[in-house]
Image (cartoon, rainbow, N blue to C red):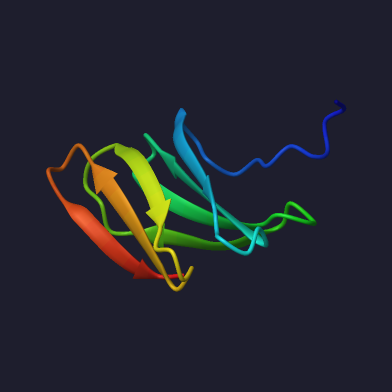
Length: 82
């Protein structure tokens, strides 16, 4: 298939991505210690979630899409309003 868009905004390696259950939002976690939420249709950044003090290694949406979990090298899991 062909590339739909390129999402740019992280300043270091992107380690994890996850689509929300409705497919409208994409979350990405990065070694820049942030989690970013993107509009999946347009590729526009919706928000940048800051709070980890280590690399973000994983992101996952709850089944209802309302909460996002992120895991980090700072030995924490954070829950965010998605």
